[in-house]
Structures are given as structure tokens and as C-alpha cells.
Amino acid sequence: MIQIKSFVFNPYQENTYVLYDEESRDCLIVDPGMDGPAEERMLQSFIEEEGLNPVLLLNTHCHIDHVLGNHYVFEQWGLIPQFHKNEVPILVAVDNYAPQMGIRYETSPIPTTFLEEGQNIDFGAHTLKVIFAPGHSPGHVCYFSEAQNFLLGGDVLFRNSIGRTDLPGGNHEILLRSIETQLYTLSEETIVYPGHGPHTTIGFEKKTNPFVRA
Image (tube, rainbow, N blue to C red; front, side, top):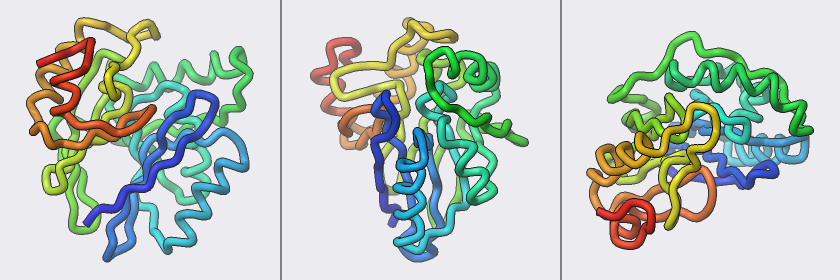
């Protein structure tokens, strides 16, 4: 079974996730947002104390709060991030605006291969499916476990809210369409682990979300 550990990092209160296989102890690091040495130690301590072996670094998208820790993960475990090719300009732009925001940012590596819509990501005995869900950013993807019925949703769908679309590359209509066609087509029991805030379910959002109701 996949176990999920979440951390809340950086001034934007971003959710960083570690997914790990109980048997093999292999783990995935998703959207590392560590801001500074204290948060970096929190992630590393958890991985070491649990005896985990980081094998993949995944980003849902490349806004600053979701990639602050990419460089650290690369330095510690040699992992190059994987994400959709449409996010490259979003990632490159972080180098320019991070200093203006007063945020320490060490440049993230650029992927050597990119994720595609519908692609399967295997680790241990488990599989995550890549779901392409742009709108918050042009190459935003989510990661879905059909076996355990959960979704790492990034900044697409939140508990009673949705991702903002006023950042570069954002598009409100495309975001709504992504939610309706890519997320709301999942079962109502699907648990959504978002990029910010508490987890939710597809069924709860379809009934109560003020922005997108089914």
C-alpha cells in the first residue's frame, strides 16, 4: 500500500507530499516546497527515520512555491524533476522573480524527459497515472492512484475552491474545463490531496464547490 506523508512548507503554506511503498521503502517526493534549512531538515529527517529510498521527484506544476526544494532534492538524492513540457517557461521564470519577492531560490534542474498525458508512473508495486489538467498553469498535471483512489491534485481543485488563474499562463475557462472533464469524471469517493489546504473528495466538491458544481 502507498502511504502518504504531507508537510506544509514556505510562506505560501504549500503542501509537499512524500509517497512511499510500505514494502520496498521506495518513495516519491512531490512538489518539494522547502524554504530554508529548517524545512529541508524536516523532509530529510522524515525520509531517514522511515528508512526510505527516494526514487522520483515529481512536480504538478512549476510555480515558485512548488519548486523551491527541487534543487535540494537533486543535491541530496540525485533526482531530476519530472513534469509536463509546458511548464518549462514557468520554471525558468522563477529565477527572475524570486529575488523580487525576497525568496531564496536555488535553480532547479530541467528534466531530461517530460511527462505526457495518460502516462503511467511506476514505483514499487504501484502505479500513478498522469492526468493533464491545465488552467492554473499551462502544463499542470495531477497524479492519480486508481488502486487506492486518490489524486495528488496540485493547484487545480481545493476544498470549496479552485486554483487561481491570474498568474502567467493561467486561464480560468481552461481550468474549469479541466476540473469538469478530468477530475469530476473520477469517482465521488476519490480523495483529493491538494497543493494547499486540507484534503477533500470529488463527491464533496461536486455538491458544494461554489466555483464548479456538477
